[in-house]
Amino acid sequence: MDKDAEREYKHQWYLAHRAETLKKDAKWREAHPEKMREYQERYYATNRDLAIERARKWREANRSRFNEQNRAYYERNRTKILKAKKAAYDAGSKRKTKGGIYSANRRANQAANGGKLTEEDLKAQFELQDGKCFYCGVLLFASFETSYEIEHKVPISKGGSSDISNVVLSCRKCNRRKHAKTDAEFLKSSY
Image (tube, rainbow, N blue to C red):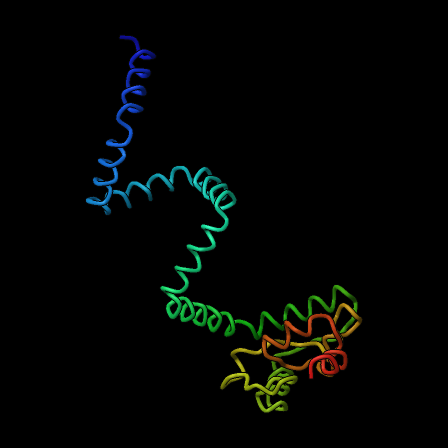
């Protein structure tokens, strides 16, 4: 028997015995989860791009099932997910001071609006605001290093500078809601 004939014979045999073969394979996989995990990890490592593309296509073809699975996973692991998100946010917030200053100064320079923030300026503003959000008054946690956002009263996109006279500290929620409004527009529309 040549290779093509042998391949065709095996294919026909598989089609004739497909249901029992699938049951047998599923039973083996259930009995050997550690071997399956090793195989999957090895396969993914050698076929990463193919696996990512296959998963993307499956998600597109099964959007509602994918969303349902995500919701179910979230409900089962809600506290763990929220705890991980808070830890990641807190870790990022500790780096925010210098990164936020750099970003605000860079954006103002690109727009040629001028102004330059320093960490001392922000610490003074934090004290001036009693550690509370400029807009809603929520406590910006216990220390200057965590959980605040640098907010421009007049946005850089509307000609505002990164000078301390144009900068306040706000909570994430207010900063996101304000978007590109001036502080007067935001306060008028929100409060």
